Length: 90
Image (cartoon, rainbow, N blue to C red; front, side):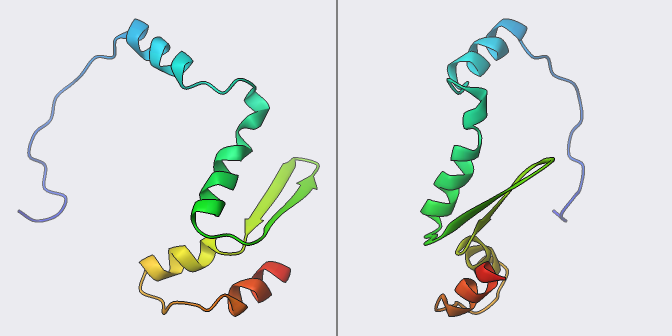
């Protein structure tokens, strides 16, 4: 079967009560804690450095290893980390 071929269409319903229950079970204790998931992802990717810059519209977060992990998934050669460190300083 070729990629993107439609095999079926239709409709579905979402049970509002079950959806709200699931949202409540996975809600953070404080809405301001949402960047912690990004920090966890950076640590899981092997980040040695996490840089946070505040801005008027919010903040910018940079991880040194995340770009290398993404690059490897798209066929770039593995990095020894030196280029990642240089990229994170710029």
